Image (cartoon, rainbow, N blue to C red; front, side, top):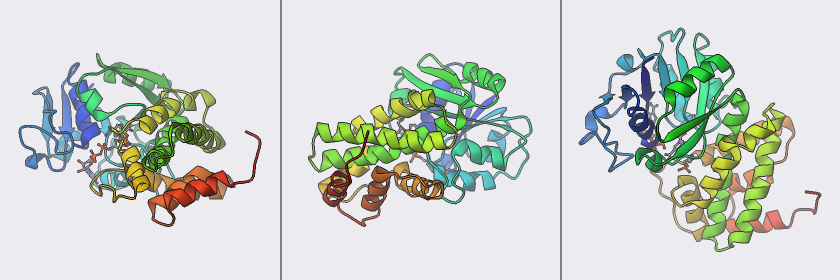
Length: 315
Ligand SMILES: NC(=O)C1=CN([C@@H]2O[C@H](COP(=O)(O)OP(=O)(O)OC[C@H]3O[C@@H](n4cnc5c(N)ncnc54)[C@H](O)[C@@H]3O)[C@@H](O)[C@H]2O)C=CC1
Ligand SMILES: O=C(CO)COP(=O)(O)O
C-alpha cells in the first residue's frame, strides 16, 4: 500500500520523515519548489530523506492508496476542494486538529462527508513534530470506524518511533485533539500572567471536564478522552512551550503581541466549539474565556477573575 502525506508543514513533514523509515512515502507540499535542501520552511533542521518523494504535484500524490491530510483544520475543506477526483477505495487519514468553523465537523467527518467513496480515519495525540522528526518515541491514536481498515492503517503507519494505538471512536479522537488546543491557550495565558502552577492545574482539570462534557454529548467514549488523543495531548500541550497554542496564550498573558505567523488551531476551535455547545445547550466557561481573550474582547486578568467569581457548584 502506497502512502502520501498532503501538507508540507511541520507535522506533515515530520510524519513523512518517520514513515520513510519503513516504506517509501510521497510528501506533497504546495510550495515544494521553494524548499531549500529538502527542508520544510515550517520544520527547519529536518531535511527529508531520499526515501521521501517530495513533490508539488497534487495529482501525483493523490494516486497513493493512503492519503494523510496534514494541513491546518480550517484549510482542510479548501484542500479537498482542490481534489475533485474520486478517491474510490482509498484510506483518508486526517492529521489535523480542530473543528471546521463552517460545518461544525471534525476533520475525519469532513473527509467522510466530502469523499464518501473512501474510508476516513484520524491520527491524533501527544506529538510535537520536532520530536517525531528527531526520531523520539511518540504514541498516537489512530481512530477509524471500520476496525479492519483501522488495523491495516495501524500496521502501515506505525514506525520505530511512532507507536499507534487503534480505536473506533472517531468522534472522541477528533474532539479530544481539537479541544485540548483551547485549554492549552488558557494554560499559556495563565502562566504568562504569572498566576502559577496551581492555577494551571485547575485550568487543565476543569478544561478536561469541558472536553468530556462536549465530547460525550456527541457520543464519544470516556476512555478515548482519557487516552492519548484527549488527556495525553492535553497534558503535553498545556505544559510545554513547544506548543504554539501554549505560546499564543502565554504572549496574551504577558500582554505581548503573539506571533501571527504561527498555526494556532485553538483560536478557531474555541469559536467553533462554542457554536456547537450553544446548539447543544452546553456550558463551556473556560472555552468562552479563551475565545474572549483570543479575540481581544477581554484581558487575561478579567477572564480569570470572571472564572473565579462564577457561582459555586458541585465538581
Ligand atoms: N506541529 C506539530 O507539532 C503538530 C501539528 N499537528 C496538527 O497538524 C496540522 C497542521 O499543522 P502544522 O503542520 O503544525 O502547521 P504548519 O503551520 O507547520 O504548516 C501548515 C502547512 O499547511 C500548508 N497549507 C495551508 N493551507 C493549505 C492548503 N489550503 N493547501 C495546501 N497546503 C496548505 C502551509 O503551506 C504549511 O506548509 C494542524 O491541525 C496541527 O494541529 C498535530 C500534531 C503535532
Ligand atoms: O498538537 C500538538 C501536540 O500534540 C502541537 O501543538 P501546537 O499546535 O499547540 O503546537
